[in-house]
Length: 148
Image 1 (cartoon, rainbow, N blue to C red):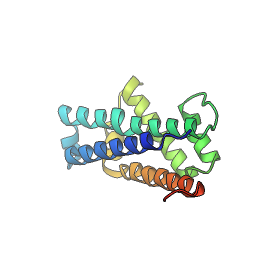
Image 2: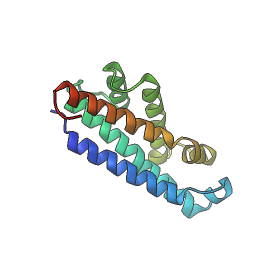
Image 3: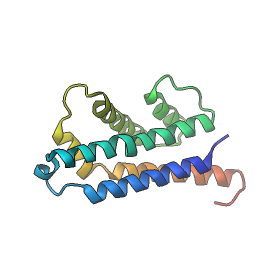
Image 4: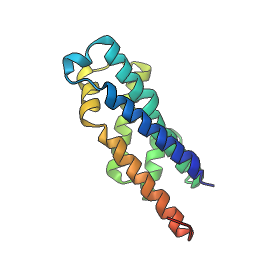
């Protein structure tokens, strides 16, 4: 059974993290490279925004009984196959998850330019994800005949 309230709570969490990122987002690449700024931004991206997105995907896949994912990338694929998120969003989520893995596991050094690009040019992907999930929830609600 889909835990709509938990999904909405995770989306609210995501919104809060994005607001925090917006407050500390550096105005320039040079500002980003200051160690405190860099670490704060990386941490908010990793544990907050990207993890919240993965949690929402897990809740959707489990709640809609789309099958057991073998790995996190399977979450996105299952949602795309069920037409719950767009193929483009599935690709963006895989890329963000890969970036999160680099931050968490430090597979080599994090490329500061890529991290800065995510902060300055790709935060909208989180908003787009949120919109797609809310559309899914509204669709599921209306298909049950409940309030939309």
